[in-house]
Image (cartoon, helix red, strand yellow):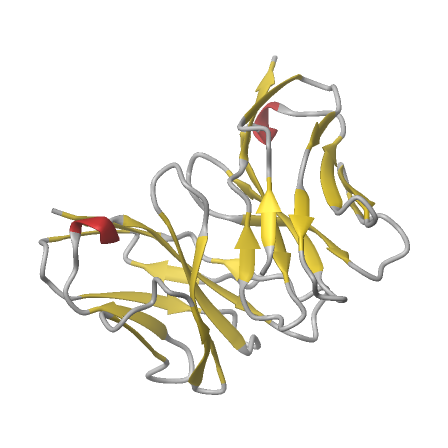
Length: 115
Length: 114
């Protein structure tokens, strides 16, 4: 069964450093998302991406964040200058609008720890 | 604005019993989707079940069913015949008419007792 994959599973970085979180969405999906979940809290939307551009973003997704689909399979989230409060689990998700109810399929997440 | 409320931070159920996890929502969109996800301790988010706002019948997927009461704006998840592997966090989520982002509730931690 196809699944969303994410690398790395855990990333430790120092405050102020840049990190790139990588995702490979399900191959025939057209919409891609990033969410984050601070430990013990609910999942929060960051950004959605369709047709090679951002279709929606939340207030959390400020200028330090960017997304890219550098090729036909990868979808990346870059955090330019990490802050302590960026420590969270980051989930990538994808969906196929023609499938079921448009449910989003999530990757296993990348745990980002900023020290 | 869309809002999802899960009022049960923690629930316990005896193995083989049924349990209901509550979810209420608020939206002004005429068309929307409601979803439940399971998050085990390993952290991944697993899609369980979907209910469309115009669906006449409650959704079912194996041991999972969704008790959808549109007038009350509730979409409770019912797990029948609980198993030890059902112990996890459960999140209710909603997709609005625009169809982009999901809005999640704060989750319910379910513990199945042997």
